[in-house]
Length: 142
Image 1 (spheres, one colour):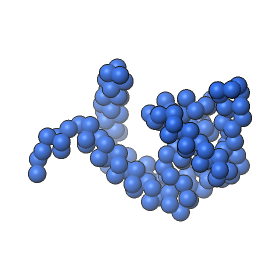
Image 2 (tube, one colour; image 1 turned 135 degrees about the horizontal axis):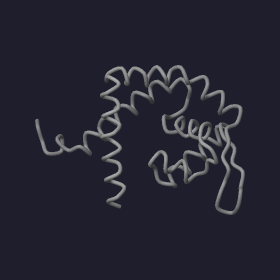
Image 3 (cartoon, helix red, strand yellow; image 1 turned 180 degrees about the vertical axis):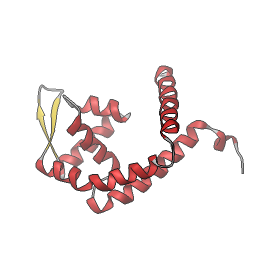
Image 4 (tube, rainbow, N blue to C red; image 1 turned 90 degrees about the horizontal axis):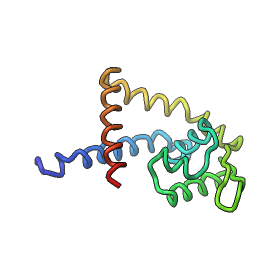
């Protein structure tokens, strides 16, 4: 069936993102961490001066969702939050957070590499440029 919905770029992007997330969830299952939680840990590890707003902007998620993710990661012992002022927390990985990132790294890289191998380097570059163009349009529509 070839419906308008199935021809929609937004629908296709969301559909593929859901499938990727579902497969990554299976990869991460042995580590008891969700894809969004692991992505958040990666951001905390590799970005400078990380706070909830920065994570929200990088992941494209609302602050409430990020707050829930951070609370879950804190309960699991993977991060610690330190108040800078009444509204801002400094966020750091704990030793346990470093361990979960490290122990899941090979599986995550294998998953990412498998996806990347489906496209040539030129196709990957073009795909990322196309997604950036769509993202910029969406952001300017707000």
